[in-house]
Length: 181
Image (cartoon, rainbow, N blue to C red; front, top):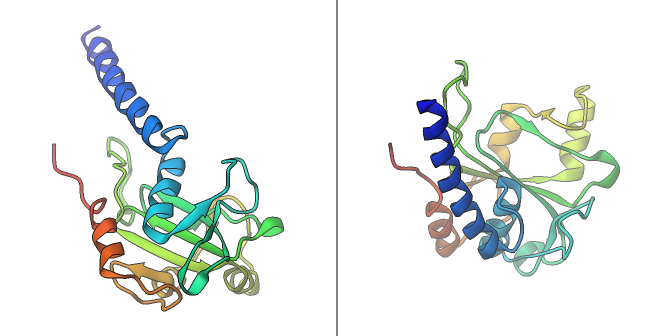
């Protein structure tokens, strides 16, 4: 019973935080909605009014990608997978990730909401590359490591599709690490 009592208290504390995040972002406090909120603020994206919009989450409001559609993903770990909807491709996939997943079991390992890397994929070019290599497209599409590397815009700017300002880098750094404990 001690474990259940302790877990109940932790869940209550989590629920308080979740209500606060929901009040701030205006949508349920899932990692997906929170990632969309973060990306919208940092990358000047105007989000769709409905979170259920199928093809994309929003449009870039300024810069070199003004008006282009974007689907935003936030994965707690970079596992080399990307959810792709080939029948409703956006112009871009903007992917925020935590650390690379280790080869060992995830059992007992937390999945903190941190941003260690940001990637920007041109959706059509990515789809063509994956199809050329016979990759099954859909939920949890396997994307080769070299494609992830070439799409990285943070912390290292490998891709030049969307150059980041010092202000954008500083904003992303707010979510970069989690304290131990």
